[in-house]
Image (cartoon, rainbow, N blue to C red; front, top):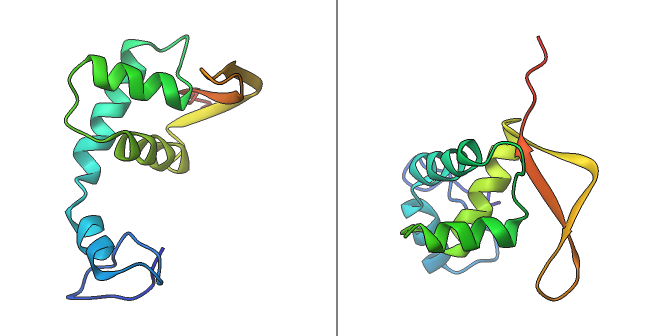
Length: 109
């Protein structure tokens, strides 16, 4: 991520990215896309999703977000501690690779 601050806003892009990427990062609707992704996890709390499944679910449900934004929102939610990956919890992608399965974070009080 860039540490450069323009107009009082930190862009969601790398320092070497062109200005178009900085502008796109500014336009990303983080809260709305994260909310949509979180609602998908609430609809399927036990099974969870690998990223490719999450993108398929979003496309099937008519999401207006790109696959990249869906995956980024999932990563942001994991970074916030709202989603977790269980050790050894993987599913195969359509190409046969292992993909992490993400679920709602368990609440430990």
